[in-house]
Image (tube, rainbow, N blue to C red; front, top):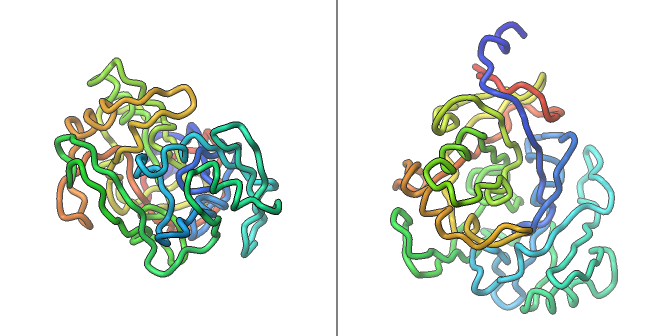
Amino acid sequence: MAAEVHNTLGSVLDLWRFPVKSMQGEKLESARITEKGVDGDRAYAFVDAETGKIASAKNPRKWPNMLACAASFVRPPAAGQQDPPPVRVVFADGVTLSSGEAGFDERASRALGRNVTLRSTPVPSPVLEEYWPDIDGLAHREMVTDEAISLGAPAGSFFDFAQIHLITTSTLAALERAYPQGRFDPCRFRPNLLVRTAEDGFPENDWTRIGVGAEVVLEVVIPCPRCVMTTLPQRDLPHDSGILRTAARQNNVMIAPLGQAMPSAGVYAKVIRGGEVRPGDAVWRAT
C-alpha cells in the first residue's frame, strides 16, 4: 500500500459500460473487471443481415441513429455468467424494448433503417465500416473503409481494440483549452474509466502498467485513436467536427498497429489482474 501512495497518478472519477456496441451506455457505482473487461461491456452488437458487418456509428451515413439509442441491462450480469442478461434499448424514436421480447430484431431493424440481428458473439474475423471525414491527421479522407476489431482483446469480443479504455481529466482539459467553444464531455469518448488527474497535457500517453484500487492491474497497450464518433450528436451534445480536429492538432501520436500517427485521446489497456473498482479508488503506477 505504501508503494501505491508514493506512485499515485490520480483517482477514478466515473465508471461506464456500454452493453450494446455503438449505443449510449450506463454509468456505474461499481464495476467488476475480469480478463474480458468490465462485466457486460460491449456484450452485444447489432449485425447487418445483408453484409454480416457490425453496425457501428463509425459510419454515421449508414447508421445515423445508433448513437441516439441507449442500452442498459434488464438485470446486472452475474459473476461467471456465460451469456449476458437481456438488454433494454431505448431507440431514437423513444420506443423501449427488451431483447428478450418477441419481435425485437424486427423492431430494431425498423428503428435503425436496415435489417439487423442482435448478437452476443461475433462472427469470425468481425469487421465494421468506418467513415473518415476530411480532417488533417487521419489515415484516410472522405471515404469508408472496413476495419477489423478486437485485435488486442480476447477472441469473441466486440471491443474496437482492447478490453479497457480509459481517459484522464487532464486530457479533456487540455483539449478544451485548445478549443474552448467545444464541449469535451467524456460521453463523446466512451471510456470505461474516467481518471481524475492533476497534471497538464496528456499524462496517460506515458503510462505503461497501472493499478486501480486494491485489486486491479492494467497494462496500457496503445493510445486510443479517435474517429468521427467523437464529433456526433448525442444526448444534448451537438455535432462538432472541431472535437476531432482539435485532437489531431494537439495529440497526434504513433499508433503502432496502424503504423502511423493518429489523433488520440485516452488509452487502451488489457487486464493483468481483475477485481472490483469504484469511484474514488486510487490509480497508481504499478510494476
